[in-house]
Figure: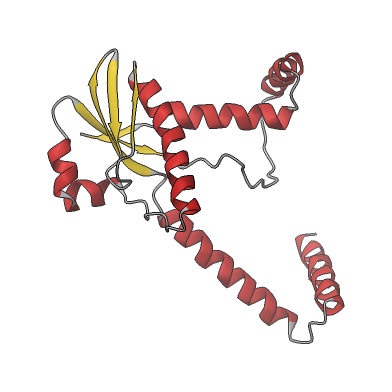
Length: 189
């Protein structure tokens, strides 16, 4: 059954490739595509989830410093609020840099920041934490994915989304963005 499905897919690819004027070997094309995908996936997996941030302060007054993004800071009454503000500030900082034609700094891992940057070590104190702040685009490039969820959860999502006047996918996307922005987990001190 799987072999039949793979054969049908190869036939479909072959037809599409030849329709586009491709005259080479389809097996070579598939192998090259798989190699490029594997390399791209490996690069993406090796990239940190966000920019290193140092959160310091006390309840009612937290400040976030992002050492890889000069003059980029955020604040909030709670640590969660400060990290949520940091996600917005990072996005705006990156958009402004791109508007000026500047490249974005490569995100560093927490290990690289702590063990290779004296500034980060200096900023980390007893009352501070290290976190990763994600770079969330304002206008997302969407990708369709298959997602298996509990039936009752889907029913609850549908009910809330309908009451809010938004589509299920928009509701789920908003919920995921909020979760990412508010739950940037400390990775060490």
